[in-house]
Image 1 (cartoon, one colour):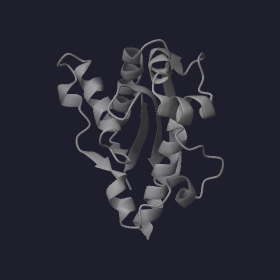
Image 2: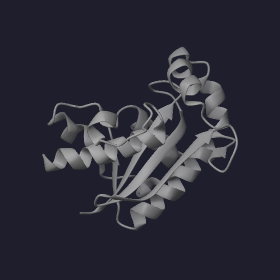
Image 3: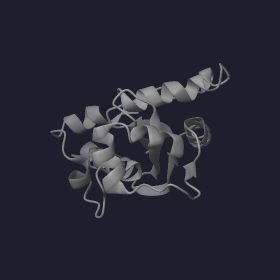
Image 4: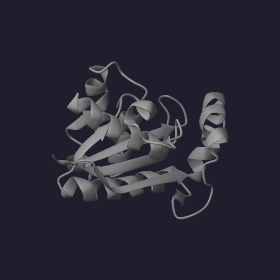
Length: 172
């Protein structure tokens, strides 16, 4: 089985700028790397959206400082690009769960930030776990993954749940 880079993005609104991402890299059943990053600029903007504030910012108590927090949305996207490119160059398939609109918009911004230099580095093809998970009834990812201690809407937890749920769905 190929390496898989599964990522999840939290945007300021359904079609808005991403303010957080989480990812896992799977080699078969094993998570070989995981990470998350948050933008202070984006979290301030996200607080203006009632749904995001009530369902993500307040219950998750996301970090406002530390090694996984950057000042701006551009820094967030640049950090994502660096990580994504490293794994793409290592041969990883690029996956997300229900790519449109949140992850697709984030990726478009990541590529556009390169001013043309990233055009050939785009995540193509991007694979969507949703198609496979729909075949088994589109289950709740946290439940279906069988992983304990996951929090809904947390970008790293959502990436883990989707990656493990996808593996399970492919085996059924």
